[in-house]
Length: 228
Ligand code: SAM
View 1 (cartoon, rainbow, N blue to C red):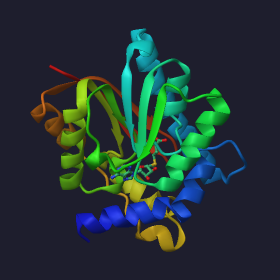
View 2 (cartoon, rainbow, N blue to C red):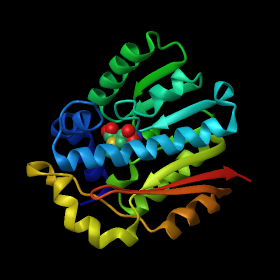
View 3 (cartoon, helix red, strand yellow):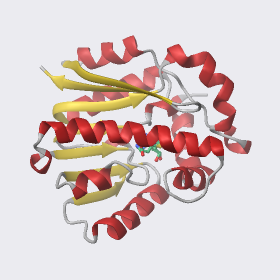
View 4 (cartoon, rainbow, N blue to C red):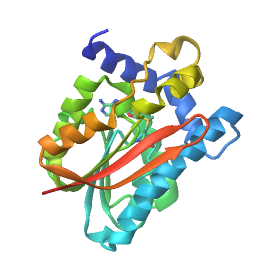
């Protein structure tokens, strides 16, 4: 499968069965045990990012690009805390859902822009560029290009998460639960931390903070890297 296929499949997945599945996981309605575990794990990743940014004490001064924003799980709380948010996603359905949730939660979305856009075509300049749980959909070579592009948009910091390769065996055993049925065609790629760090460093960034979220069915390594 080539990279173009990966992207087309991912877009179609998140505009169809993937949308329904992940909208539920990233919501607060009833879900099965596996989905609940993934929901809780993902929330931990989101909470860690929010706590890092809040600890710095300057959220209202920051412009933040949330690349692959999904239903806005990160963008909406950051906007509520006053950050200027540019949220985008390759899936039109995800972006529509994110906008609806932002309106329902925030009442207004003045400091938030939502766009249907794949992250490769993002332009502009943001203090912080964040990309959570997106790289899992792409092989390392493509992930390298994506990370480099995200770095080029970041004035001072990138924050990204990925499924680490050292958990490969465990994840692969469980991966069927992530993409059940016909949508199993959507592959999950694992990345070596050393490869991610290398590409960050080659773009002039150094890792500052890191975290690992590990639940039964959810594994996500989170790195914050700043421009030197
Ligand atoms: N970042 C969100 C979060 O953590 O709540 C959503 C994570 S979800 C597992 C992956 C998201 O990445 C989906 O909404 C999908 O549509 C989006 N996505 C996948 N490939 C993308 C790309 N090339 N550019 C932008 N978004 C992409």
